[in-house]
Length: 251
Length: 264
Image 1: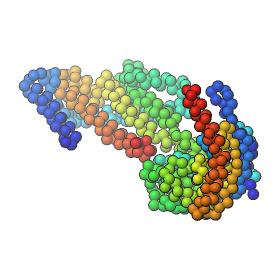
Image 2: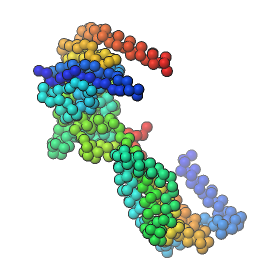
Image 3: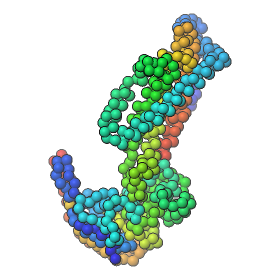
Image 4: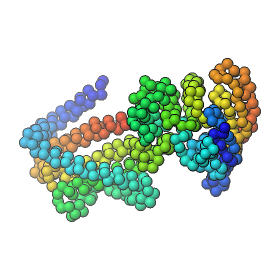
């Protein structure tokens, strides 16, 4: 059987059992609202535009934060790939920073920037920067020496060699770095918004929770999941695959 | 007239225990302009290192390489094009862009394109201009690499076991193509190989190298008309002659490996 059909049947069965359980009041609507209620909450949210505003506000923060993260991450990555001293000092610290979930910076960020957009964006930036830096570093360090030797025999050296060979050769790592940076930034964003102020998907989630609107909570969770899935599977994995193929990294 | 002079080339390196190892010992060679010279030897004799020195990618510990009685090699230059065992084409560029790579800085786009196309035609890949590396077979990649090295119109073509990774049929095809290109372009070719047959088929001269330390055992002239397919007998005689020189060297390598085996 076609895997897609299997998947659809599976989802329909799960939703059916869930709806049935709710209708038979096996569990209370407050603990786990029925899929139909979630659907209504989502519809209303989109109809009165609140979820649309949330979505736009969240994405605005994400894009600003991710852009800054990619820029700083690339700069740090280049620096530690090229300078041994920088790698020994900044490089070793990056690993430590990367193992701390960036949301723990929020209390400090709120002290520095106030309870606003900037604090959340700061957390998003921290979420994406380190993983990007590590990947850029690996990319530059793993350029095949064969490429460099070949380029040198053709007169390339210095900055020219970097721009025309080292940089393009490490593009697969830049793509992977960007994908991971996005994934970390996306999680950091929602966490930041949950604890911060609105509008935004994370804020609406915590707001709905405060008012016991569990159907909206689940609705926002679904939106977050769907966006994550689309960006990761549809955008990044496709780019990553086509780059890997062209760069000959695929079996 | 002497075109490339290798003057008492010496190469040493120090291993982990700070023991000196001599890779190349007192290499003296003169190569004429337009000559096709093979460097033949067992693995580990330093033949690739020697070629890499002519390319300017490796520094000699002692001695010098002089081109055209004019300048000493101390780095890569566009007068010396190189083809490696791995084609080392840039996967982010298509065939035409790869061959244009060495031309970008010194001529207009149009002129670079024309010149690149001219050499791509020489290796008979004109219908693959916009293909990427992963879409080409190993033999085709190596032909693109040859076109790329030729595109900057170097006086000297350095080839480091360029056909070593190819199957027999493709190799035979590329031998013929390379021979034709050499006849057409009159380049001076230095060709590193471990195939006796390949070296006899292609070269004017064969430098047979021994190992431990790497040194030149003999310098054999191959004075047969081209193409050499009709001179099987003479080629066999040269092969025997080379085998005489190499036999003791190959024994040495085998003995070394056996010793390593027993100590590990």
